[in-house]
Image (tube, rainbow, N blue to C red; front, side, top):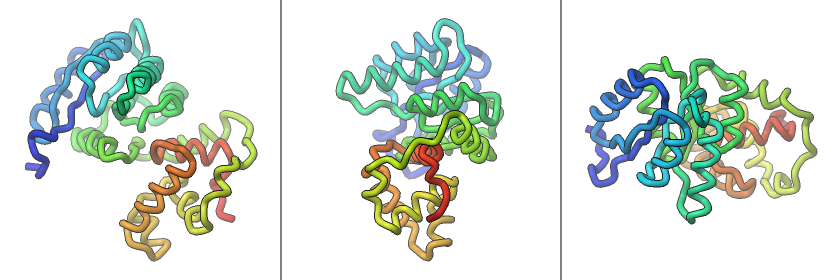
Length: 229
């Protein structure tokens, strides 16, 4: 038992072109009392249609699929929801590599992170619950590669005006979070409670117009804001 009421189960849609993988994930989700399997699709186009019909809370999205790939499907699902005035589902990209250009592009397009397809089942379940709670997920060990990809993908932009609205404390926490530290790690290094760190992170995201911590990483490296002042 997870303590989550059945009426508030997290509805999960799976989009992947491998039937055997879909069957395994379907069984895994079915074994969890706080999760509900909302449906499955074998390509991105079908996934976009199902997302609009079933309105899942979380979408597990494969990158490479026929008809429409996971990058295009991620953008389409988010755009469709926003046009309809709905909160878009959280999207977790499924990839076979720690980080490649496709996964990075999906994150830029609105995904809340990515998980390796050969990850332990417990990690996939934790990823679903984490993104549903509003945080982001990056495959274990891939944070540094994510940093390097976005810092080298394009020239650094000038510091954006909205960054000046952050307090000195918020800037310190921004840098630590952008380097991949968890709330607990930030709390320990800054001698703050985790609740206080969480409040600071929420304010930072709101001031910068970012959805989650993965977008914070992208923002930090695109603008060259990863070094402490």
